[in-house]
Length: 233
Ligand SMILES: C[S@@+](CC[C@H](N)C(=O)[O-])C[C@H]1O[C@@H](n2cnc3c(N)ncnc32)[C@H](O)[C@@H]1O
Image 1 (spheres, rainbow, N blue to C red):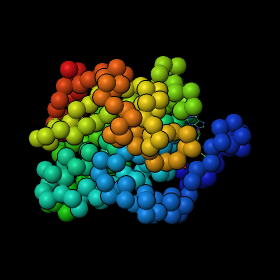
Image 2 (tube, rainbow, N blue to C red):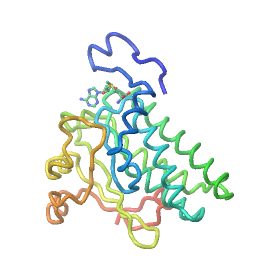
Image 3 (cartoon, rainbow, N blue to C red):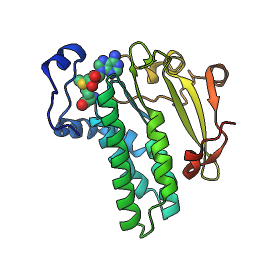
Image 4 (tube, rainbow, N blue to C red):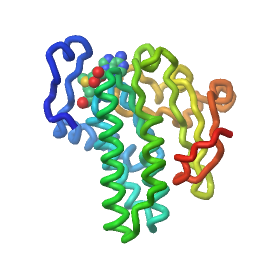
């Protein structure tokens, strides 16, 4: 993570780029309402101006600890660590920041997951988990313009929903960012730009018929650790 709060005065002027210090990130994430969401492994977080991941990286560390505490075995932790990761979403405008964001998320997942699986569960690091984590991070961290809802090449921003299914499986479905925020209602509003947002929560506003219409692509049902094999249904 960048220890300097700004990279250049021009970037502050042009893009409002000022990074949040770790102390402030921790203060904000310690708020009881945020803490309750962190403790809920399926609650999603969305950072509309992610920078290099000041909030998302800390959320990942905290969610992985929750995943550990809710796991009774190494194989449960393998699944729950990926579920925890899959709930974190971010958009960032600038290419160099997104590169750092993706790298910071991958490094954090690899270090924290490996530490927990070897120390707390006395098990081996599972390469399939690390490969699947990389795919989730690359899908959930997008370079684009949040206000215009377009990615760097001008195409609509697309996010994946990672829905846990029975038997350690996951159903991945893609939706445009526009469809998600236009149909998700009060608990899913991006306006206000808070760092917490239930992107895919079952709010009742994003009902099944609308969801069906705005579906972009559905992947075959697979186990969490097989996400990296990515087959389209
Ligand atoms: C104030 S910084 C905050 C970065 C990070 N959230 C943090 O707390 O360290 C704002 C970030 O938003 C990005 N940004 C500016 N306009 C944006 C837009 N329209 N869409 C997405 N990101 C944007 C900037 O490049 C910058 O990295």
